[in-house]
Amino acid sequence: MPTYVIRYEHQGARRWGVVRDDHILPIPGTFESTGGFLRAVDPRDLANLDGDPIAKVDVNVRSPVTRNQQFVCQGANYRQHMIESGVDPNSKTFNMIFTKASSCIVAADSPVVRPKQVAYLDYELELGLIIGRPITGPLEITRATLHEFVAGIVIVNDYSARDIQIPQMQFYKGKSFRTFGPVGPYLCLLEADEVDALHELDLTLTVNGEVRQHDNTRNLVYAPAETLTELSGLQDFAVGDLLATGTPAGCALSIPSPFIQRLAGLLPEALKWRLFLNAQARRSQYLKPGDVVEASIRSPDGRIDLGTQRNVIEAAP
Image (cartoon, rainbow, N blue to C red):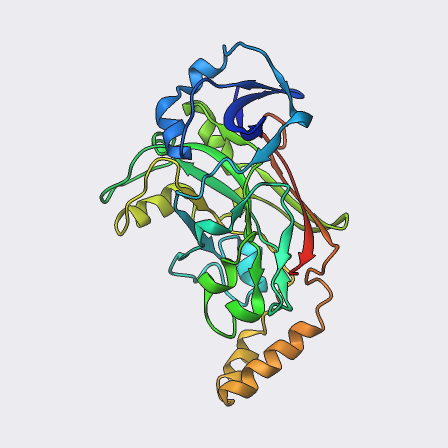
């Protein structure tokens, strides 16, 4: 069975613990990073962990990914999301990769602050993979060997300021504002024979109770093993680093058709982006202060359940 661990604050100390129903069993030791925790703890030992439990309601849950880890992301990686973005998934020939600032990482139930200069705040539910083994050179990773490199999985919401990301062509800036990266609540540690289950997980996101995103990881265009193989050829990963695997269809962002995009390319730059922003202004799906966003990822059989994120959107002071 998967092991669910949580990073939490209790009586002024930050600790890690194993989730057991409504309680947490503290894990001995202090760890300065997600990688430090994973290197020091054998998940097989956690199954028999004993001690004095703490009620979950008595702790403040923190992100299971610490801010001293990398936050790498895939873009447009679900078939339907590609289609709604004007991309043919059968003809896409490259994997879109970008990063978010690790300072945007917050707990799963943290408020998300919409900056004053942002009008079009969007949501992006994603499955996050936690790296379990250092990657320092080119590798050929397969679905059969994926368990050697993925220690566990988490929920990620890649909040995005579309009026900065798109007109400025700045993924990093548009997606890295503080609070734009809730992670957790749980880090689900998987045994070798359980890692394959991450290819059959249901993702669901609601805004004020209305379903906006729902898909299954079987519809990823670039699968985890394929992506890690590609990335191993260009960058290092440390234990505990985070790879977010892309978001399903249903975002607030409205992308013009390829034909309209070609026409827009003939317009002066300022006019093109003014028309784009005017089109977004008609989209009621963008997040407003007071909106409640809830996100969950689980397997259809219930064997894997990563919990629920709940974020209330707040305006910047």
